[in-house]
Image 1 (cartoon, rainbow, N blue to C red):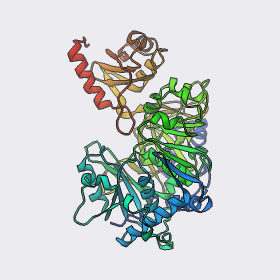
Image 2: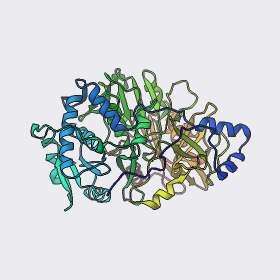
Image 3: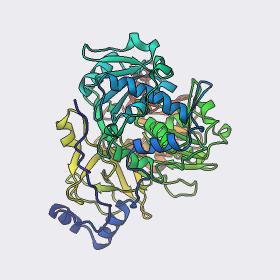
Image 4: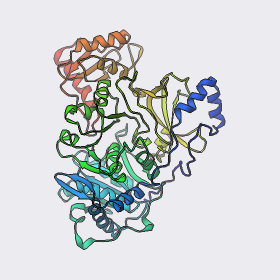
Length: 541
C-alpha cells in the first residue's frame, strides 16, 4: 500500500481573515452581528508563520548535520550523540531499503521506550516512510495484527527480546533494531533524494481507540508536524542545549511532540526509565497529561522551564501550581488535528484557565449543530481548520466523511469536528467545557460533567477530580488525594451549580487511575463506582 497522502491542505495559502467564505459560510457569518463577525475572524484565526523547515525530515537532517557531537538522546544511563544517531539510523534505513521499503510506505514500530525506538523513528523518516508506533505489552496482540494489516506494512521493527510477542504475517519481515543499528558491516550513506519526503507525504500513522473497539489510523503528514513542532509556541522553545523529557507511550500522539519536537529542534531527548519523577527533575521541557503531571512532586522539578499539558481537562490548582515557577501551557487538540491546535501560557491571576488561542496557520470555529457560528461568548462545538488538519482515517472513508468536512469559511480546505465544547472569552482565548459526550441529562436536566469536576476542584482540599454519569438520575465523582473531604467538595458544587449537578456519591482516592496513555481511566472508575455503591450500600436518588 502506497501511503503518500492526497492531502486536502495541499498548496495551503497563508491564513488570513480576509479569505472569502463560500456562499454558505458567508450566509452563516451574516447571521452574526457586525461586531461578532469581526471577532469571529480575529479570535478564530491563528497568526501566519513559516515553519523553519518544510518537513520534519528536513529538520532532522539539519540537526544531525549541524551538531554531530551534541547529545541527541539519553536513556538508561546511555547517551547517543547526533552523529551516532545519524549513523545508527542510516544502518537501519539501509537494511529496510534492502527489504524494499521506499518513500510512501508504512513501517510498523512495535516495541517499548528505548534508544532503539528513536533510531527506528529516524530511520523510517529518512526513507520517506511513515512510522506506525505501538507499545508492545500494552497493545493487545490483535491490535498489533490489525495495525500491521491495515497499513500494508512490509516491515515490522522491534527488539530481539520482544520477538515472541510480535505477530508477523507471511508477507512481512521482522527486523530487530538492536542487532542492526551498531553493526559496522551495515555502514551506509544516508538515503538519497528519491527517499526525501515532501510536505504532503505521511510522516506517521497514529491509531486511536475507536468507539466500535477497532482502532482508527490517523494519517499525519510532514506539513502537519512541521506546522506545530517548528513554530512557536508548539516548539516550546526547544533548542540545542535543552533537555526534553520523553515520558509518554510511543503510541500516544503527544509522544511525537516529545521525540520529534526535541530532535527536529536540536535538543537532547531524555528517555525515562521506571521513574517519571526522576526524569522530570532532570529536564528543561516537560510534556504530559494533567493526570501524569498531578502525580509529580513539583517542588523537586526546579530545573523545568517549560511545561505543556494536553489530552484531558486540566485542574486549575495544577495549572496554578506549576505556572508559579515555569512557563505553563494548557493546550488542546485531538490526534486528528496534529497533537494540539491551541495553546497559550497560563498565569495564576488569569480569570479563567483557558486552552489558549489557535496556533500558527490554524483556525478554530465555535459552531452550532448546523455548522453556523454562535455569538461570541456563547458555548458551541469547536471545529479546527488550517495546517493542523490531518489527511483523514486510513481505510475508513465513512468515518473520515463524518468527522472531516469542507471548511465553509475557507473554500477548498478542510476542517475537523473535535467534539469538544468551548466558547471565546472576552480576550480571545478558548474556554473548554469538556467533550460533547460529557454533556448529559440527569433527572431531565442538561449537565456538563466537566463543569461539575471544575467545581469540585475549587475545594481547597481537592487537587484533581472526575465526574461520571452513573445513570439517568445520579452522578458519581472521584477526588484526590484521599484526604480530600467529600462534603466540602460537594458544597463547592452546591455553591456554584444547580442542585441537580451535585454528585450523589463522592469517593476520595490517593491517586486517580490512568490509562497507558496517561489519561484518566474513566471506564475503570465507573466499574469502581459500581463496586463502591454495591459494597457500601450508598443511597442513590
